[in-house]
Image 1 (cartoon, one colour):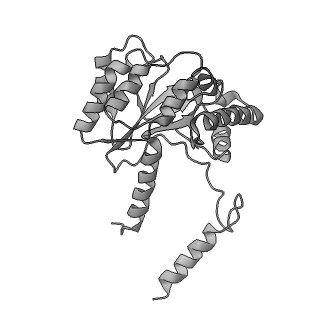
Image 2 (spheres, helix red, strand yellow; image 1 turned 135 degrees about the horizontal axis):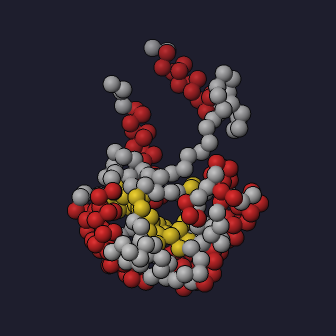
Image 3 (tube, one colour; image 1 turned 180 degrees about the vertical axis):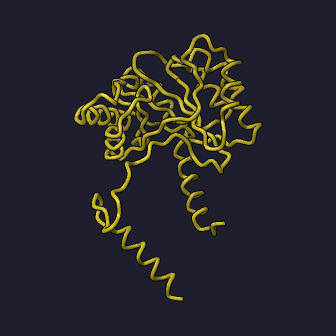
Length: 246
């Protein structure tokens, strides 16, 4: 009867090992993960919208989301917020919207040194906090481009790097709203993170969005923010860990 408490105590000792120093006879920990989706066991999907600098702001997208009471996560660059102060405050005022960071000037993080990464993130974080009254916890790499060093730096700055597993292809002028809707609905699955754009790069996003939202809900998906998706995924993983293995 003492085997279980002893094993549990051993696990606690390992968990309390000093950070960045592997416990004896253990391999160094692997790099932190880059998040591309949530739990494949839960029928939840996150709609995300990027806003890179110097393009614009598609209010029709926000209108669709608010009319349908649809949670969404927006990744905002610092320069975009600087030029769209009112829009940023509007997004922050919607309780079921979440704001994340998308760097200051939208550079390729796979090519940056640590000092430049720090500056890109810190400046964006400062402005986001100033305009929204809350600090972001999520980060999306510009162009979806990164290196292992960039991932580690984002985590060091207390942010979680978020990618995606479903591409809407909305920056392509040739893709119609109907084609975009069909593609997204065909690719979406449990835990999917869908990438779109709110800054005018999505040519037909606003037209496709009602069909995407209705189609996902008709398939039984619950639309949530990325943070909600990750929290539910963590809870699901912990619950699965308590189940006996077959």
